[in-house]
Amino acid sequence: MRTQVGIVGAGPAGLLLAEILHRHGVESVVVERQSREHVLSRIRAGVLEPTTVDVLRENGLAGRLDREGHVHDGVRIVWAGREGFLIDIHRHCGKRFVAYGQTNLQEDLFAAADRRGAAIITEAADVRLEGTSMVWKNGRVDCDFIAGCDGFHGVSRSSIPAKGEYEKVYPFGWLGILSETPPLREIAYCHSPRGFALASQRSPMLSRYYIQVPLDTRIEDWPDERFWKEIKARFPREWADAIVTGPSIEKSIAPLRSYVAEPMSHGRLFLAGDAAHIVPPTGAKGLNLAVSDVYYLARELAEHYRTGSMALLDAYSETALRRVWAAVRVSWYLTTLLHRFPDASPFDQRAQEYELEYLESSERAQAALAEQYAGLPL
Ligand code: APR
Ligand code: PHB
Image (cartoon, rainbow, N blue to C red; front, side, top):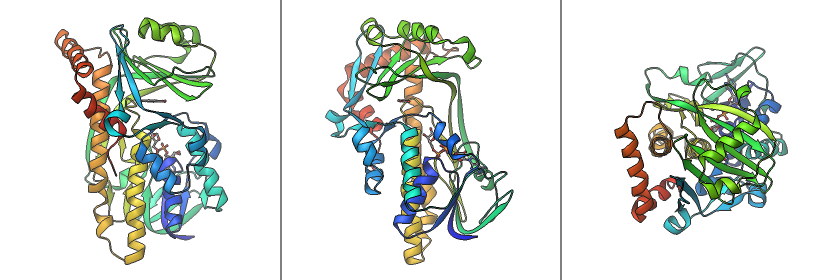
């Protein structure tokens, strides 16, 4: 088999790239290691930046998102038992973001791919790259270019020799649950002496909550009652009272990490999304970065097929990394601001409290954070 662009991985990065390329008349084949059911069962974050929504809309992928997504003006930060303050993105930046689960977006992307009869090969075992060919247990596709959209544990990144790797591993994880209960009105990030907590949402009857936990935490030790008791102990009283509890329908633990590989390309191989970088979920940038990488890469591949020029493609890594580092930085900032670090000295704790005080009292600090939470323009 032969195609123009070989795409490794059918996560949001891989499937969105295939869609945008198709709209530019560029053909691709997607090769995915897991089954479609497996890919669709993963519960991930659910906050879409305005630019992400624009990209999806421009490519005809926002039908359900526009109907079902919940539009927000800002996010709340609560701490020290007080009601907290709103990072008002609409007031500071004139933009709004949308709460819409990555799982839904993944469904929308598969639906779009099915409508056009796209080439997506799932359950491909032992995928590897041989130059610009994708080779797996019983198949092979020869390509002009490879897009490595195979996530953090994929194979593509190892084909980039002599890369710089920048990493920070945090000494905690997030225990998350999904429950069929009405969510809080706002998305609320909570700093407390017992650790960080987050109240988020998927729909009017589906809530997503997280608490910071030590890395050695076992899910079995966290029955629902214990989870609800702990999250209510972290949130200030009036917020805790507003949390509607119920049985969880999903529960999982994710460790927190920041990671960037540079450059994001080598010859005719280009990495996009989690294959090239990981951000901690504080700030919900992971999916948004996958979308911005893909936006640049699709534009540059389309330009290449139109003009024969490699100039834009050669600049891909540099272009994408500017936005990547902006998101990596704000995700690290929010993680550092809002979590309880087990090894924090009394000095560290005081500095953290006064950073929160400053953010609460300064319109300008809030405006700077609002701009970054909303996401930079493409
Ligand atoms: N061969 C083929 N497919 C692979 C391989 C491989 N060797 N290794 C991994 N994959 C697949 C995975 O099974 C997965 O479906 O690549 C896909 C990568 O998808 P994601 O991990 O969702 O990554 P990405 O598309 O970059 O999306 C980024 O997802 O992880 C979240 O928080 C992250 O929201 C962000 C978004
Ligand atoms: C989520 O809804 O899952 C979510 C929201 C905001 C975050 C992280 C995750 O920062």
